[in-house]
Structures are given as C-alpha cells and as structure tokens.
Image 1 (tube, rainbow over the protein chains, first blue to last red):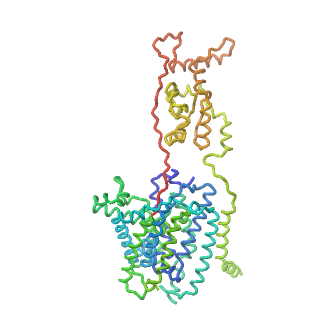
Image 2: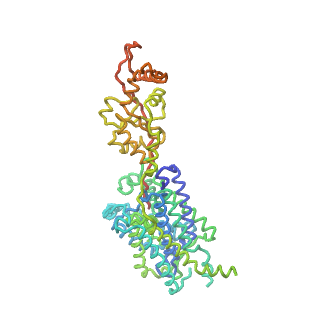
Image 3: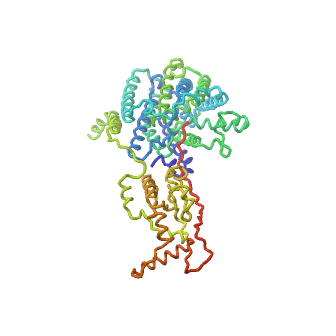
Length: 196
Length: 175
Length: 219
C-alpha cells in the first residue's frame, strides 16, 4: 500500500503541499524541543545539555520501530522507501567535515533554519555560510568528484552490509539508545552547569 | 539560578519532542517514501542563484547542471517547500513560546563578532560536508537511520565522533 | 491520596516508557515471520479461478464487438506469427512470453477496460489469466475455447438439425448474422463481393501509464 504518493494513491500535485505541512511540523518540533539555540545544541559535546542526543535517538528509535511495524503489517512497503545511498568515503569525510562545522558553528542546516526563523542572527550567518559552502563545493566539483562519486556501495541497509536481521538490530539499537539516555543523565549531573 | 528557572519549562521534554519527531518521520515515509531533509533546500537556492546570475556558467558546471531543468525552476523541489514549512513552523513555535528576538547567542566569554565569524566558518564547512556526504544531519543521519541505511549510520557516527574529538579546541566558544 | 499515588507512578515514568519501547522492539523480534506475497492471496486466487465469471463465451464477445462496446480490450496471447495470420478484430497482441514486460503491464494492469484474453484454445489464455490475477490485475476474463471455438461457433456455426428446439435455431441465426458481420459469405444470401479474408481491424487504445515513481532522495 504505502508509500502513498509514489504508488499513486495521492496525486502527485499534493506532494508540495504535503511537503509544506511536513516542514511545518518539523520546524515546530525542532524549535519547541530547543533546537533553535546553538548553545543548547553544542551542549551535547560538552556534557551540559544532551537534548540533541535525546531527541535524535528517540526519534530514530521510534521511527525505525514504527516503519518496521508498518512494513510487517503490510501498510508500507519497505523496499519502496528511499534508502540513503552509501558512498563509503564520501560519508566518512563529509561527516568529519560536518562534525567540525557543527562544533564551530553550533547548528546543522535544519536547526539553523529554525534559529533564523526566531531571529537568531548567528543562525542566519550560518545559513549564509552553508550557501557559500555549497557554492565552493560546486565550483570545485571536479576536485571533489572522486570522493563524491567513488566508493559507491549501493543503496545499502545494515541488513545488506552486516548481514543481521533487522528486527534483532532494532532491538539492540533500542537498548543502546536507552542505555545512552541513562548514561547521559549521569554525566550531566557531574558536569558543571552552564546557563544560557 | 534565575536563568535556570527560566529555562526549565520553556522547551518540551526532549523525549516528547523525539517521540513526535519519530512519528513525523514515519508519516513522511508513509506519505512520500522519502525522509526529511534540510540542506537540499540550500543547495537548490545556490543553484537557482547561480543559474540566475550566470546561466552559461551554471550549465557548464557538472554539478549545477544536474539540478537545472529546462521547464522547472531549481527551486521547485520538495525540499524547498519543506524548508519553507520549517521556517514557518519554527516561527509559530517561537512566537507561542515567546522566544522571538533578534539576537546573537554566544558564550559570555566571547564577543558577538567572534561568534558570527565562527558561525560563518561552521556554515561553510557544513555546506561543504553535506554535499560530499549527500545529506546533512536530518537528511542522511536521521532519515537514514530510520530506514537502517548504512550510509546514514556512517555519516551520523562521523559527525558526532568528530564533534567530540574537536569539541575540546572550541570549548571557549560555548562554555 | 490520588495525587500521592499519581506522583508515585509518575516517578517511574521514564522507566515505564523505556519498558514500553523495549517491549515494542522485542515485539518485532518475536512476531512470527512470514513470506510476503505480492498481489492477492492464494485463497482469493482460487475463488477467482472457480468463479464462472472467469470465462466469456464467443457469443457474448461477438455481441460486444458488433455493438462496438468501447469498454473492453481484446488481448491475443499467442505468438506474433499466429497473430499476423489471423486474429480477432481489435485485438492487441501480447505474447505470453512478453506478458510481464513493462509495456504489456501498462495494458494489463489498469481499471479502465475489461480485458479479454484469448489464445487458440483457452489453455495459454488461462495461464496468462492466472499470472495476471495473482498479481492482482483487475477485470480479466478468458475467451472460452479461444480462436478454435470462435471458428466453430461464430464463423462457421453448425446448422441445427430439425429435431432441435427453437432456441438452437435462434442461436444459429444469431451466429450466422454475426459471422456475416465478420465477413463470411453465405451462398443463399448471394452477396457476391464479400471476401472471406479476415481483415484485422485495429483499434487504437491509449492506456494511461500507472504512476509508480521511485521515491527520491533526501538532502
């Protein structure tokens, strides 16, 4: 049955309207969880605020469990979903660069849009930075192309690359996330509070 | 202490936010078969600007030309509409929470100017990294993890792993 | 009192939520796994297969063609050579081997037209019917007896003997009229210039492609 739009249950014209609605909810949730504040976001790296980790992992766990239940019950065809492609070194190098960017800038693209929406000037500057970054990448595309297009492993899931049963993986992933929540709370108690 | 009191109930419980975000991801996949994203909208904006300013250059560049379509503006993509939604949604939430204020948020130890320069630098790095990894924290890591994509997990671990490694060098900016 | 009890429960709220999450995840591990079928279940297929609706008789088909009923598609599942040699009017050729090609599926998997499959007898058409039904394509029927039956009943109807009921005579005259429509000449009619070669009439059918886009990417 699902996904609805690619299977033609909902006409394609609705796609953009649904995009705006989904975006609205996305922005609302991010902002209401405190993702529009860069110091709150950066807290995850210094141990004074783990809201990023908590929101992020809760969302991932809930989403993956929900999607697999829907798939199991036949409402959603997992094979039709978009699986983020695996370009091994692209993912690693890109991730490293983004990690440095995260700590220096204190935002990621989605949260910077939220920050900009409520008037954070640093978020607006961050967005400007992203635009410049994309521009630099595109201008030097030939230089980056080997990493960008190389080491392509296909639209792989962990089931393909690790050979594990998805259900067991989700179970272990859930437990890891719960343990992480517990540990983080312990860390937070020890770290000196930062007010912002 | 006063500040802590102010901050305590302003934001949602993170688990509640995460729960709703998880439901939203499920909904997004159920409707459209794809995940959430954010940096894609900025890529489209850059393509649109370059295409407007220097059309021939944009067409000759191997990267821009992928996203230029004769009969469709590069801005007419799903992710751009989604980003508009994010902007509106965050604004609604911010105004309901009374958080709308033009300001630069920074540690008391650094100046606003320094914060802005670092924000710009971080943005440039993020923009670059997001293109190389084909997605940012929401597109690659969050939506990728929701469908157990290997690439999503690798990107997520690379972002946060590096974050912890370099966090020490930038501590003055934040604490 | 209530407040105190509530507070007691609420102090465990994170543990309870964590437990719920673990149970949900464990549910995925423990639920019995099954192989997913594409299309309809074997049970449904069986009930479709024994339904009399599955076949259409040559007389009904002749009627539909003569009436120029626009609501059906006639599909020939024989190979191309036989199709060129002889085919029913307005038929489209989709050989059994190409049944699941993308192009053919556009014709077969849609709900605008009724689809009537035929082959020389109904053996191959039945095979095609089973495959299409299994994939949950709708409104498929098989021409009973296929082309052979078509010849035996419509093109060359058997003359009833005198001891047969009147119905048989009615049927005969109906079939005779139909066969004249399809270009058969009868001596008693004395219409000289009708050729018995079956001109294959072609009908242009535009079938809307079923939308099935691949989901596209994130950032």
